[in-house]
Image (tube, rainbow, N blue to C red; front, side):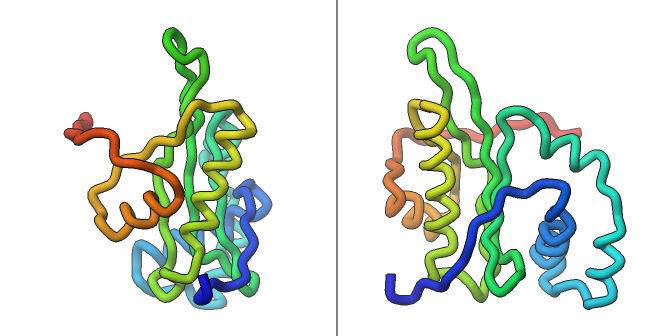
Length: 156
């Protein structure tokens, strides 16, 4: 990957969540918060979020470039019993800021899923996508298409 950039990957916790929250705002609104808004955000206490971040088996990592988060991956370890006696790593969400795509960020974030799979002894990493471009990244990371799926959820 000649187009890669030098990033670090950090696990999200209550100390760095405010920066993660700034990135989520950027994703949702298409623009970053102002410097003043970011300073105000540092003072916010996100009690409910901190509780979620401490949930056993839940992992959120962010890619950091020049002291700014530019992408994230959220992972869950889902225990399984019966046939495998080991669980799976589920990739719930992967996002990279548009101007940082195709620079190795998604690949490095997906490597966290692979590392977690090995660390926890999971039998596989699993995800669901309808994004053809993302599918190419996942294949590059060693995942294979195993089936077609229908997505269902309870709408409230």
